[in-house]
Image 1 (cartoon, rainbow, N blue to C red):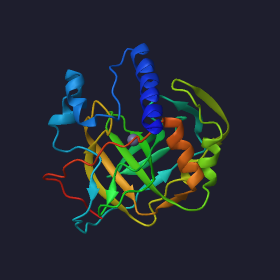
Image 2 (image 1 turned 90 degrees about the vertical axis):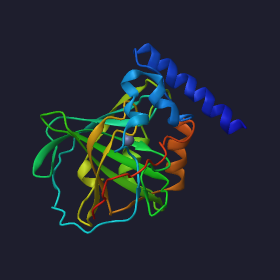
Image 3 (image 1 turned 60 degrees about the horizontal axis):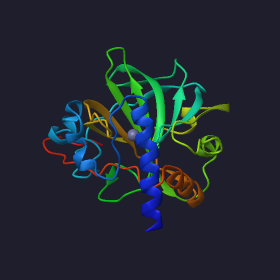
Length: 242
Ligand SMILES: [Zn+2]
């Protein structure tokens, strides 16, 4: 009951912030209704290639290596009411499908949005990249509960408690210390997992799972006031390669 109340209050804060910035409010209490909130959100209910998904029924593919040319550019942490996001300085690139995508920001969801063979993880990070044409590629890292994570700690220490808060990180975070494709990855096409749920997003979920401590997971969950995961969506005609 108390947990529910905290979550509702956090929702009010998030919505207040969203309204102040001119955005329609949405939340994780009724994700199945996002498509009805605004005409621009129609894909949230009408889309057939939506994210997240349960990663199963895999097909073996000849997946190319992902080139990562990252520098230490995570310089600012914000609480936007929906997630904790680290904004990245220009110049860090990943090559996906032979094209260059620049790392813009990374942010978190708890519990995980994507699941693997029905298994949910306590935390997931999304490294959001865009190319010159505005196409998106998201590199996802799944976290299991375990050892304290030093890289997360650099962000968590400065996590703004209130929606709308931001802080400059005294020590820039290096994405290269947080995400690696060396163990391979799951590859599928999907969408943004938040409104407007736009499709055409390249998804790469890393097989190299990381750990976060119970305290770190709880700190994120408590700051956000509840779960921040959209439920898994139908795979439909898509194939998931590995
Ligand atoms: Zn995300």
